[in-house]
Structures are given as structure tokens and as C-alpha cells.
Image (tube, rainbow, N blue to C red):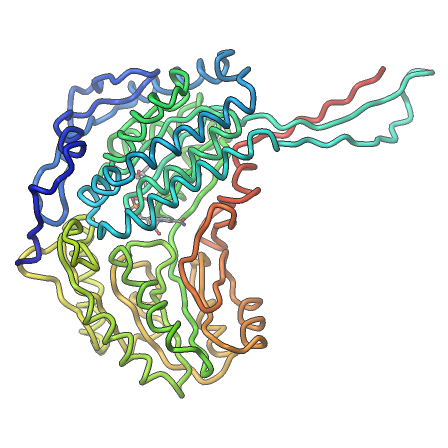
Length: 504
Ligand code: NAD
């Protein structure tokens, strides 16, 4: 059995059928249409490099069509006058359809992105379904307020009644990355649709297959034409055209900080509303009283799950010097024990990086660190047989100012650094342009409260890492983002408030 082996004969017929339906077109106004370019992009299995199918290379003309369709749908009675209960039922039906197709969608995600099947099947797909069900329950809870006012100058004998209402923000561009494609899409679509918006979804050019299948399921669920549109293609073409388009009211974006900043500029024409979920470099602080039975597997999962291609990956570990050596040894042992392979191989713990470009990038960071005196206690190798695979890697001797410590690698690479004082570790943890997430490992209440209050991050976990759920707000401080997804805050991203003042 080699790294790349898996049982092709076990491929689900529904997956084969979906792949064979390619070249895949664009979903615009309820129809699957060819891209105006006539061009298609090969969709590769990153483990083997084989072509799975082809996806459309959308253009700005296709974006125009999709945005017009979304605008018409937004204003159509079929959508704008649909009762909250009916909207809720549609979201719930879509969740049911995803659940009915959970194995197929998990396999598609694995083939397209490379992740271990169990990560998709038991983590991301249930998370996707939960998003739609959570926000299905919100459609009739988008409440305004009545406001007692003291305005004195109304005509004699008249009174004032003032209130606010919540309205959908309008046409939403949902632009998502390649690391957890369907889950990221659902974190935008579910609240946007619950709020009554219409959506143009732009998946990553590396991983568009589950977004296209989601488009099919949205039609099957019965969403009116134009409410959900899917335009595949490159970021600099489709993404840029959406960001600049005057017909788009709101961008829900998850991706890199560099592109997030570019969107600020592109979106300024009509002052689009923006939610930006960006990069991270999340610290994990291990105190002397940490429970190793939790901390070691928790940190290892936090960095090696999905090959470290996770925005909140626990990539910077700071361990108290009294337990530092033991932690390095045990996390390194966990890293060495992980089996690499094709995501569809049941024995696989970690699949390939999403692309050769990404794997080469990871290798370059480690090479540079080693040249600068960093020590490798596990991994540190790109697999020769297929360069998209990179071994789970543990590094020591990484200094605070090094690129390895400061930049998001987005690969299975963790540094472990000893500390002595709380003030010192807080300063190091906060010494980052990012502020997405962090974890603290301690059995002590005082340590837990002290550290959670002093760390600048959108989420701080205690004795766990990467715990998500639709009801838990998620967002970044500093260059990790603008705004919060999930929970009550998540749906506010897709609503405008209107104040109505009535004299009667
Ligand atoms: P990316 O920023 O390169 O691309 C994200 C999306 O934006 C893709 O669909 C891409 O095609 C599109 N895009 C690229 N250039 C564009 C442009 N000029 N205008 C408009 N759209 C454009 O990110 P990626 O490499 O796909 O994903 C990895 C990044 O995503 C990492 O930085 C990671 O931290 C981040 N991420 C953040 C979160 C979070 O919740 N904070 C979650 C997952 C991933």
C-alpha cells in the first residue's frame, strides 16, 4: 500500500455520477449555464494529481448575470413575501438534503480538497447541517423594538409611535476559501438566507465541487430561482468582479488577510457591508498544571487536523519550562504516529496539502527556519513520492521574530517554545498581527481567567482547541477580521435596521 492508494472501486456511484456530469456550469437564476468565456478549469485530486472533473471559469459578464438574477429574486414576491415559516422550512429542507447526501458530499470534499474522509464526514458535514438548522430557527426571531420617544414638537393632539424593523441587507456575495469549503459556504448562506437575502456564492477555484452540489440541492429544496447562485472561477476575475459590483450590497468573505484588505478597496464604490474572516497564528499556552491527557492530543489535533490548513490552527505552542521537554516529546510522538495517505483511505489521519503550491510553501518555511538554527523534533519533510504531502512537523528553537513564528503557514507545522513567567507568555502570545484564536491548558481557575482576559483573540478556549458550533460567535481581532459569524451576531451581518417614526 503506498501513500496514494485507495480503493477506487469503492467510489460511491453518486460521486462518480456528479464528476461525470462535468464540465460543470454556473448556477444563475435557477439554471445551469455555460460560462461566457467558454473556458473551464481542471479540478484536481491533490493526493494523486489526477483530474476529477472540470469547473466553469466564470467572468465579470457571468457575475453581472448572477447579480441581476439575485436582485430580481430579492425583489420578487416569491422570496420577499415568503413567510418566515416558509423560509425556515426551505432552510430545514436543504439541511435534510445535505444529511441525506452526507456520505457523497464528504467524499467529494475529500477528493477535491485532500482532507481525511473522517474530518469531512464527522466534523465539517455535520457542522454544515447544523448551520442551516440553527439559522432556520431564526427567520421568525428577527425582532425590531418599539421606542418611547420624547419629541415635543408634533402637532397639537397628535402622538408619536416609533419602532425599528430588521430588513435583509440585499444581494450578498459569499466568497469562501479552500480549506473547509462547504462549511465556510454554509456559515454565510445559512444566515443570509434566513435573513431574506439572496446570494451569489463564489467558492475557491481549488475546491468548487461541493458548492456546485450544494447549488443542485438548493434547487431541489425549492429555493426560488435566483435566490442561490453559484459562480465558480478565479479570485482575481469572479471574486474581484463581485467585490466591485454596484449591485452587490454585502460581502461575506473568509480567506487570507491580503485578499481581505484588497476587498476593502474593491468594495468602496457603493460602500458594501463587509464581514471579513481572515488569517490567524493562534497560540496555545500550556501551564505547569495542565492535564497532559487533554493537552497533548488537543494541541496535536489543533495543528494537524486538515493538515494544519485551518485558520485557528494551534501553530504557536508556549509551554512552561517545567513541562516543556515532556510536551515536546509527547507532541512529537503524536506527530510521528499520524499516518499520511489519500483521504479516502480509511487508515489516513492526514491527507495532502490542497496543492503543490501550498506544500512547497510549507516546505520553504521549514527549510528557512532550519537554516536559521531551528530544530526539527518530528517531520520536517516533504514526501518525495507525491510532493503535495508534508509530514506533521514539530519545531523547537523558533524565535519570536522569525517568519515561522509571525506568519501564517497554513500547514502541519507547530513550534514549541518554553516560557517562565505569565507576563512573558502573554506578551509573546499577543506579539502577532493576528488575533483569531488561542487556547490555554490549565487545571487552575485563576490561570484560566487571567490568561483568557489578557489574550487578544476572538476566541479563547480553555482545555480544548478548535471547538466550533453555530451558536458560538467566531471572528478575529486585529488583522484576523472584521465582524463575527455565528450566533445572534452572525445574522446581524445580513440585516439592516430601519427606524420608523409615525405621527398619528
Ligand atoms: P484566499 O484569500 O486566497 O482566497 C479566498 C477566496 O477569495 C477564494 O475564493 C479566492 O478565489 C477569492 N479571491 C482571491 N483573490 C481575490 C480578489 N482579489 N478579490 C476577490 N476574491 C478573491 O484564501 P485561501 O488561500 O483560499 O484560504 C486560506 C486563507 O483563509 C487563510 O489565510 C486562512 O486563515 C483563511 N481562513 C480564515 C478563516 C476564518 O474563519 N477566519 C477560516 C478559514 C480560512
